[in-house]
Length: 321
Image (cartoon, rainbow, N blue to C red; front, side, top):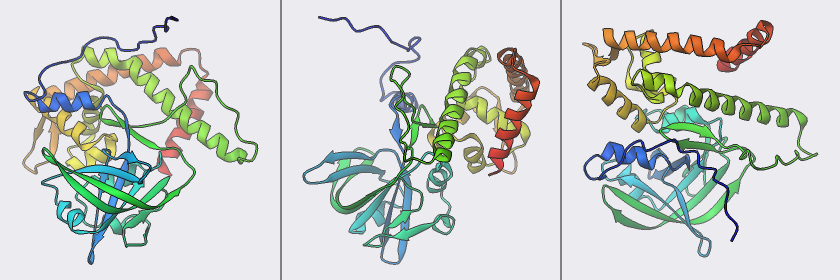
């Protein structure tokens, strides 16, 4: 029997226990399993409903069935249970803002994004890489959630890379390093190949540098998620929705990080109900920035100043697009 090479990347045990005793820790454990990101929509009479969902899954090819789950206390639950049809929009890698929009309580969400009605009125979002128009088949009880099974009546698939969600934050798909990179299709426009390659390089570089910087965050007692929140709050106090937009974290990850930061005395809610850094929080944020500056200087050693300046200019310009 051939032995499989040990390619384990886990460094060590982070936490373990009874999920019933600590729901937040259990949720973090579940976050180790990456998922795609979808927006499920429906039309219930004259009312539109939609929500960001990462519990979507295929069930069967024959018949064509899919499922997803919704919290019992969700304000949209009644609309999805009353409507006969719904649509699943699989988001593309560049649709983080769409995910955040439908993960918020913004009542104007359908006025802030381009979409078209499906055959039964369910909104189909522009830019999605897949759209599934479904008839609600059955609903199962699932603890604090309801499991909705749909019969797919029509599907559409588009070019593009998927948006992923793992460990409380958004991510993009990349070929595994052990796989040979397949040559680009000769019919694919060169400009598009370069753009896709650049996006993957940016994502890979960001994740690689973040992993290397982890020991510095651990030394200060913060996580990657709480570090992002500290950095944003160092600029000014803000609301939860602004934290979500600025950090590119999911709601659950932000809630968990804020809970920890408040317990540690780093963050408080001020008189305007905004999240704000305490004196200790500012000290930690400043220490984090100092370590980041030293870390960056070390990693950039040997790279020409002109190249660094060009890279900064390109990254800044990309943020303004």
